[in-house]
Amino acid sequence: MEKKSTIINLNDENFEKEVLRSKVLFMVNFGAEWCGPLHIMTPVIEALAIKFEGLVKMGSLDVDNNTKTSARYGVISVPVLLFFDDGEIVRQIFGAISRKELSEKIISLLKNKESKGIKNGRLIITS
Picture 1 (cartoon, one colour):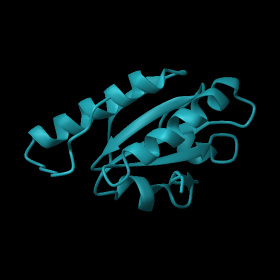
Picture 2 (cartoon, rainbow, N blue to C red):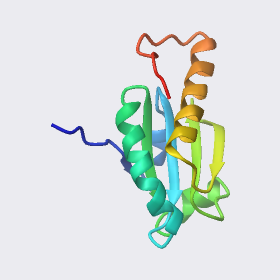
Picture 3 (cartoon, helix red, strand yellow):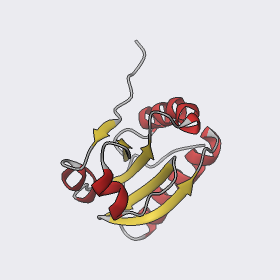
């Protein structure tokens, strides 16, 4: 049976609880329904949500319907991927990138997190 991705639908109301209070690295995909590159990135993000399940949470936020959160983080063009760790932005990616590139960036962030003394026995990942 094929595993289903666990991308969280984010909005202005649940953003703080889901993202800023997360105990694990959280990647937020800021996008809009009309955004062509977003439709290119969606299958990439879904695949990586499965690959990194338990290590990284992933969510999607529609900027047109959640202007408060979009404005808070200065999102003026989409798609934008923001990575949060302990409620702080640790990396930003603008535009569409390949699955391999995104996977490598996530692995880099996880390794950096691990090197800060946060050990996770499941961190045996290849890109």
